[in-house]
Amino acid sequence: MINTAPASGHATFTWQGSSLELLPQRALWDGATGALLVADLHLGKAESFQASGIPLPSDGDLSTLNQLLELAAQRQPQRVVVLGDLIHSRVGLTAELRAKIRALPELLGCPLELIGGNHDMGSWLEGLSAGPPQCCGQLWLSHEPCTPNEANLLNVAGHVHPVAVLGQGADRLRLPCFALQRQARQLLLPAFGHLTGGYAVSPEYQRWVIAESQVLAVP
Image (cartoon, rainbow, N blue to C red; front, top):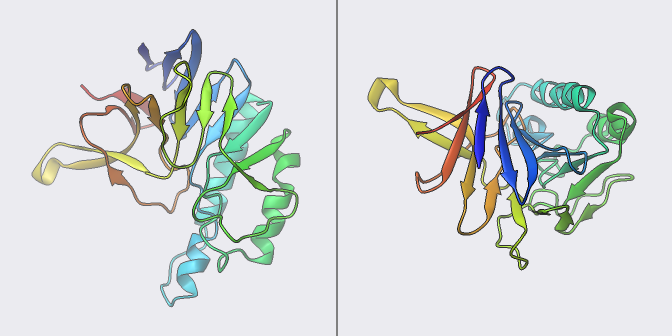
């Protein structure tokens, strides 16, 4: 069951009796376990493109990291879990970015965990190992979507960068969204990073778009 809550900007999702919050900052809050879940930050993407001669501005990481720190200050999580693709590539993993990632647990005020994504492969981060998918309460956390083996678990995943396409012609909008496939027991998180694209998910998914700092159900 989903209830939108315009006053607070988020939507509340209930799974197996546990209340989950879909946050307009493109994150999921699991109050039962105190876990703040985000996916696909793609830190260092601008530097990766610059190395290929594409002049992207380098301020995207700062916006992404500041949003994560502000969210942690609001929620006071017991742990922050990144569901893959913390970084974009080894090319963009500069000494400055390494230092920022190394400082994150202290700045967040809690442990930082990483479930390995395809963009994290082959990269080494001091004090932060890319781990396998894992169980977190009633959730099965992974980078790529999957169907959990246990019937009571909901797979929460990233990788797809889901967006919803609304309207037509000049009124057409592409908005980041949370996307739920009930039969497969999959909840896709929008990309948390500020320099990420998106994949238009099918209307077969139950979708909640993020617009004007609110999470709104798509009819």
